[in-house]
Structures are given as structure tokens and as C-alpha cells.
Amino acid sequence: MTTVLVTLAVVAVVVATALGYVSWRGRRRRAAEEDPAVLRAARGEQHRRAAERAHAQHDAWNNGGHGFTG
Image 1 (cartoon, rainbow, N blue to C red):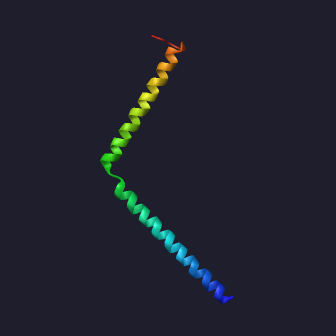
Image 2 (image 1 turned 60 degrees about the vertical axis):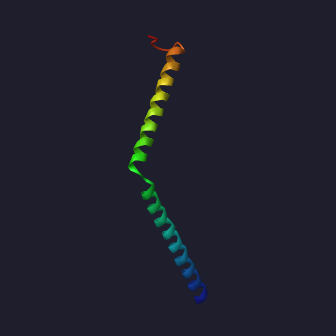
Image 3 (image 1 turned 120 degrees about the vertical axis):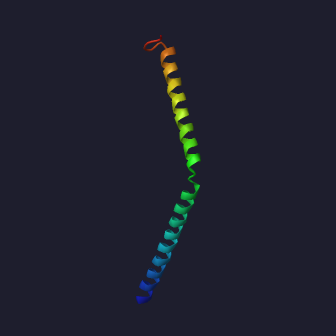
């Protein structure tokens, strides 16, 4: 019985250590990849696409005869 408990405790410690290391490594990698210039460029692209989408929806609504057409 004691051997089983010791084995389970060792397995739990190994699994917890492995998960902790992988999590720590992932956080370090993410922080290094977050270049401020790249993030700004991505946000700008995201805003540009959103504006294009809104414009296309506006044109589709007006050209479809719905609402004020000018």
C-alpha cells in the first residue's frame, strides 16, 4: 500500500513539474514574440479591414434600395 502511494506521489510531482516548465516556457516565448511595431501594424490592419467591411455593408444596404440613397 505504501509503495503505491509513494509511486503516485512521484508521478504527481513529475507531472506537475512538466506542466509548470511547459507553461513557463510558453510565457517566455510569447513575451519575446510580442514586438510592439508588429502589434501596432496588426491592429492597424485589423481596423482597416473593419472599416472596409462597414463600408461594404453600407453600400450594399443603400444600393439594395433600403434606406436613404443619397
